Image 1: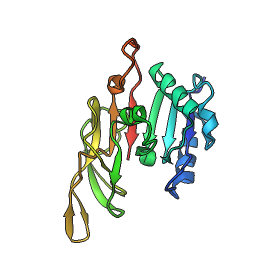
Image 2 (image 1 turned 180 degrees about the vertical axis):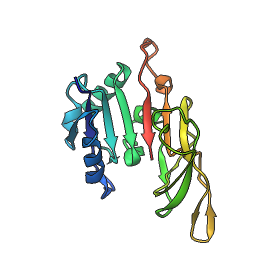
Image 3 (image 1 turned 135 degrees about the vertical axis):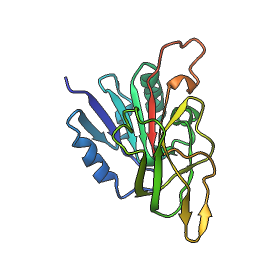
Length: 200
């Protein structure tokens, strides 16, 4: 049976023009069956049939209280999660989500070229990349260093804004993963939880 992904792209704040193309790219992955939604009620139902839930360029408060509870229970029960790009700009009012991501969006300079250095060439997210990956994009900065348990798969070198050097406010991985033991499980919860992945 083909694994299923639930892609959620609701925005309540800034909306990236790239969302339709990103959804199309994920739908083109032959390894998965993809269900795309912007309906917050979609995360209130059972998520057990999905291999992963992907919050893709979401922004603002995009989940209902019931959806938050359902997503947390799904992740704690072994379900996969990926937060892509502006997912780091969502759910600021929900501490669990911030812990799941490992870091929160702070700012980014203008769209510009940069170099991401691959820190873990054996990771599935980076094994196809060269050691120094030259890419043009929106290089995110985070409010604090990535949380305990976050591994930086690849991260940017210094970037420039105009003539001045611009340094990140905290370590800013281009792609990071983490073992979920940093997501503050309830004291009685000893179940192993899945790896969470965030890409900026």
